[in-house]
Every structure is written in structure tokens, then in C-alpha cells.
Length: 147
Length: 147
Length: 147
Length: 147
Image 1 (cartoon, one colour):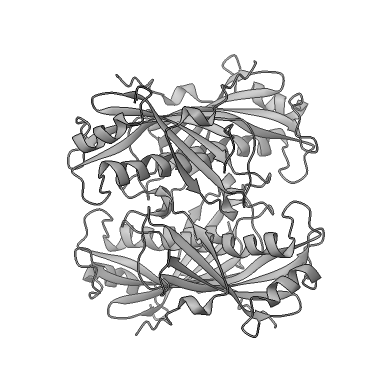
Image 2: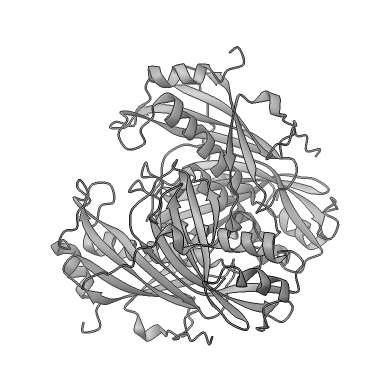
């Protein structure tokens, strides 16, 4: 088995957020644990939805659930290094969106890890899928390659 | 975009471990957060390596790093529900192994979520890849389909 | 400065819950990180409120907020060791309750760590303090020393 | 039972670090979970030890273990709000140090939560307590009230 990983670079991402690492991010082998990157993913994408798309975690009628996610790990990072999360949209559907996210040491051109995750929008009350709300769609379009 | 997820069933997994959920596993939407499933993955696979393969987290010359991971989420679970993690080996290479892991409500036949992750074995001192140690390989073989 | 810690023993606790440890519980020094014990505390106390007091995290009119917490750490534990959390009530007020919680290796008579935390009950809608609901109070009384 | 909490203010702290919140910090009640504040504590104190005292998590002969901790919660905060952690030293002993830490919304004068924790320095190899190393002591003195 060859494990082939596709590297990720800064110019593939449209929006960046700073991430401060935490003591507890490092696992027993001394690096940020593989699990923690997914908490960065959630943080970056939802911050965009909240700040640019008007998502209100507590009150919005429509919310977004994660239906799949993946990550490739290229090079280790460790607390207390400052990081950045880069965000773009790979695919924008009617009720779902697939993000691509890269985790970089602050200022680095090549990502330490990169992955994807898919949000499906649902009506909070019924938890049934629904179209992406207009304000959020408008924000997500700005993260697509074409934009 | 259609999001197609391949369901996972109990008989696909060779070994099961109980998982107690935690208050903090539930996110603001009331279900176990997508990130937390990956901490279950790590827990289940390493428990097998430790108990069956003789891995010593503190002292073993060879240790295992995660190079990629993925998860599909089929149905939500929530604290305080008791869970189980099922483990099997999808591919066993010279220096790496790809696990398949399913997360089940205790006793359920269909998984709530399932995913994969790949461990590459490295020499702790150099962090360069190395063959899977014999005792661990012997344990992993028991989790392959053929066994 | 002498750091004096009061040891805790099994017979001080009224109710026990199993806790499965996780890979990510261990920090870079190879033991369960001090932070993680507080997630055990939350888990044990709320499990009792849910199972014995009828708390519904999603729907109950009254919910409980933590206003203070503390922990003394006696001896390290590490994943994959199985643990137990012991729960008792130190003080039961009109709108608040102070728990005492001990974290034990499964079956041990002396706790590895022990602490307290205080829940203040509030009306979910207003987030103002309110009397402890009757069904929960009845459950908490059973955890007091006198019972 | 009256729950009396001593508020904490910005001028009580000597050093501040930015903290970016995460999606997973919010619990099911919509605020940063009480447990997470302790991960901020660890992060702030160790960052100071590393950057100002020369602690090397991987290699230092002496390391620091937490023997007790406590926190009072004054007002809720929530992701994605940016926070700051303020650090001071309450007591500096021969082999141990008790920190006081306040967690603030970025720029706020009054803390949202504040607590203490005590590090005991130990020789990594033996895990027996030892004097605080000179470079770390010199850094900690700067965080005491007298300085």
C-alpha cells in the first residue's frame, strides 16, 4: 500500500482564520492529535457561516449537519505554535456544501493538513434537509473557485 | 450533489469495545459532535494495538502516526447513550494499516457512523517509516477479512 | 508552600458509573490530562440527573449551570485503563447543589482524583435561578450523607 | 447555600494571551462548557513557561504536574467570541507555583471566569518533586504581585 496524499497550498483557499493551539491539542506523541484538526474544520466553516452568512446557532430555522469528513495529514504541528485555517468551497449543491479546509502554521505557504467536510442543511424542527438559506448561499458562492 | 453514504453493519467488524459517552460529546445541536467520532476511532484502534499487539505508548521503539482519516455519519447519537466501537482491518501493508471502524449504539446491528483511518508505523527516535513490528502485525492479521 | 490534598475513598460516594478512557485523554506527559477529569465530573452528575431525576437536556424547562468547580489530583491514571466515577451530594440548597465526585481506577478503593462542583438551576428561557425541580430534588436527596 | 464568587478584573493579571474559541467549546446549552476553561488555563500557563521560562515539553529534565485546580464562572461566553487569558502568580514556593488565571472576552475589564491551579515540578525520569528550575523561577517571579 502506497499512501498518496495530495498536498495543499495557501492559494487554494479563499478565507483564513487564526487558530490558537492549546496544551490539550498535543497528544502523547507530542504533536497536535489527528482528531483536533476536525475541531479546527468545524470552527473555521461555522465562523464563516455565522459572520458572513448570518447563521445564528441558537435561533436559525435552518442549521447544518456534517454528513462526512476526511483529512490528510502532511506534517506535524504542535502547541504552542499559532495556526491558520483556510477555507474554500469545493462543491455547492441545493441543500449541501462541501468545504475544503487547510490547516497552516501561521504564514506558511504549504498546509500541514487538509481535508473536506460536507454540511447538509436541515430544518431545525424536523431535521429534514432543506435548501441552503439565501444569505448563506450568497456567502458560500464567494468561496467557490469561480468567484 | 447527491451525498451517497455506504452504510455499515455489525458483521463487518471483528472486534468491539464499549465506549461511554460524555456530556461534552454533545454539541450545541444536541448530538455527539462529528469530531468526537474520530476520538473514538483512535481509542478503539490503539486499545487493540496495546492489548493484543503489545504496543507500549511510552516505550515502544516503533509507534504509529495517522496519515489520513475519514468518516460518514448516518444517524445521530447523543450522551448519555452507551456506544460500541467495531474494528476491522481493510488493508495491511508493510509499514501501514488502514482500519475500518464503525460506531454503534450498544447492541445495534447498523452503525451510526463509520470511517477509516491509516496508521503508518515510524521509528519513534527518527520519525521515519518502518515495517510494522511483528507482534503488532500478528495482531492485525486477525482483523483482516481473510481471517 | 505545602500542597495538602484530602484523599478520597470509595465509601464516601453513593453512586458509581463506568468511564471508558480515550486515547486523547492522555496528554503529552502520558497521563490523563487534568482538564479531562472535569469532563468526567459533568458526565457523572448529569447522567444521574437524566436517569434518576428526569432531566431532559433538550426540553426541560429548568436546566443546571456550573458556577464553580475544583479538583485535587492524587495519582495519575492513563488510557486505556478503565475508570469509575463516584458521585455524592455535599450540600443541597434551594436552587443549587454541590456534588463531590471521585475518579477511581475500576474497582480501586482510593480515588485517583476527587473534586466538587456546584450546579445552580435556572429557567432555560430566562437563565434566572429557580428552585431545584421536585423530581430532581428527590433524586439528589438520595445522594446526601444522611440518606 | 449562597454561592459567593469573587469577581476578577483585568488589572489583577500580569500577562495576557489571545484565545480563539472553537465550535466544540460550546456545549448543548450554547455556551463554552465549564470544562473548556481549564484547557485555557493549561494553555496560558504553559505558554508562559515555554516562551519565557525555557520549558521544553519534549526534552526538559524537569516538568510540571497539576495537583489541584479550581474555577469560578461569572458570566457565559460562546464561540465564536474571541477571548483572552490573563495570568499571574499567587504563590511561588520551592517546588510548586499557584497561578491565578482570568478568562476575558477580548478587551473586557471584568473576567467571565477565573480560577487557580497549582503546578508541582518533578524530575521527568523519577516523577519525584524537585525545585523549580532557575530559568522558570526567574520567569515566574515576574508574575508575582510584588514585581
